[in-house]
Image (cartoon, rainbow, N blue to C red; front, top):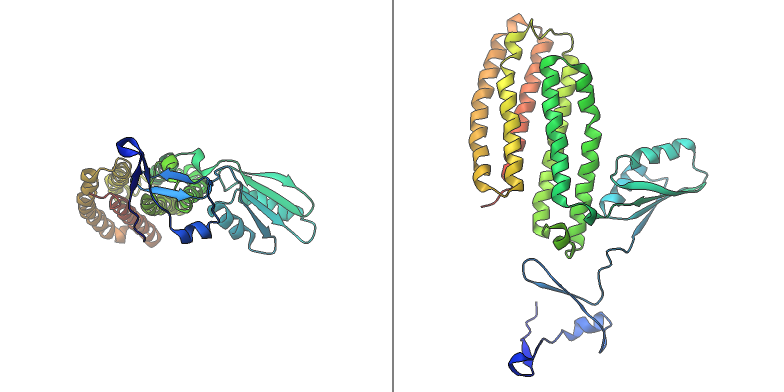
Length: 331
């Protein structure tokens, strides 16, 4: 860090001046008369740059087909590349083209814009600044929340089609999760974007944790849906005594993560603190349901007991996810 004294010319109404470090001027190859760009950040600091950050300049990554193509395309997308060129030393087969298309369908705003016998060019048509970050996270949560609630409906009503639909929707959550990571990395790489995206580089760290928590919520919903498929043969009326106690517990867990997410969006520490109290209340309900489940063990098939115990543990994990989300809210 270097210190510079602010100077003024032309009296009280004159211009303020500050000298620049000579080493920086030489390293940036600047000369008298060159234009410098000044960006004011939300925290009041100024960013000085010898050239404007070109938001519209497209960056490109070239990926040989011999690499792990799914991982490579996803990595290039998350790193913020606007164009991704997949190349092959030989003619691309129909299977290879279809594989690339499947990967593209998992990325928001990415389309195939050019194809040749040995190359496929992908382009992200939506810039990171095209959608506000909070909108992306609202979308992820709406999807994950609906998946969880539908998985519980499928559980109580033995709705196999709904359970299968919940499993299929996980891909949609992944699409927006990848978009969120791409946006957050863009802000960290180019701090000047923070004003446009309405999020600071420091807040990006919390948002990254939030993104992973919401993806985990969706994954747990899928696990419940998969258990529903295994429980298809068990009549809910016949085993009502062990299914019924889950209702109030499951409704409570949904309420927990809804309030936790609202606390983060609204930066509400008071609401966030309530999640810790709710977590303690949840554990008491958890013990009651577990007690009922164990007491009914001699009257039920062992597979049914194990699957229901797994669902109970999944709900416990979801309540912990709600607590982790609430912990992102600072005083």
